[in-house]
Length: 265
Image 1 (cartoon, rainbow, N blue to C red):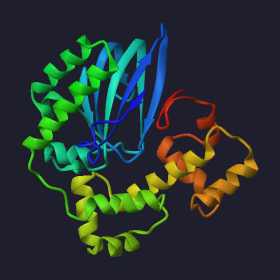
Image 2 (spheres, helix red, strand yellow):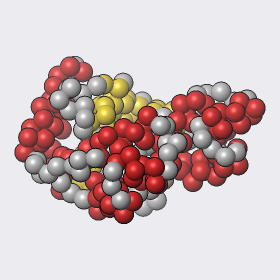
Image 3 (cartoon, rainbow, N blue to C red):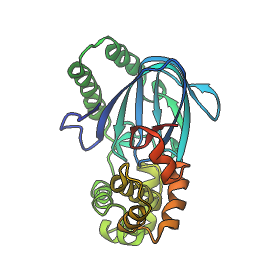
């Protein structure tokens, strides 16, 4: 279930996502980049691990910008709440340079202090979606007021421009739109989003393609929509698709989606 945050938070939080997964067997999941970072609250968790390290995830953790994709293993039922920040949202709430968190999963208490434990306890005890959302809104509005670190003045409009263009814009065009140098654009994206503008553009373009593809499977349609999404040809699409997701488009279509960028393998 995807839930919209308070209007006062919408510039910094994209949405809240509530996931309930019932299973008695081990399941493998793949999470790939969508240009956002976030925080995860485990409301009910048995054994939830990072595949590459076989390490158990904390009950509450922050994830920075994902380096293309990452795999998880789940044994048993799982209930989580994901707070998906806007691309620059984590920096806005914490003031921590986003490139320091790129590719990392960090215990949320190291970033949000012990307040995050209190929030998780409240989320565990609440029984309605409305009260869960009220608690999340209250926590992040309070954090927003405490943190005075400001974003680069051009950043929000520049990110919105990439989204409107669906990734069909060059870094040079983007720097002209932002009225700043390419070097400053690179530095700002690295520090306040966590990835380069080129990488962000690539991710948004691929997600634009995913929105066009849906669950359709016609090879002719795949070629047409890859061109429509701004790829040179189908080979270009497949190369970038595999780089980001680790899968071919056909393998992605056959997977079970929990969200656009979170699938059961």
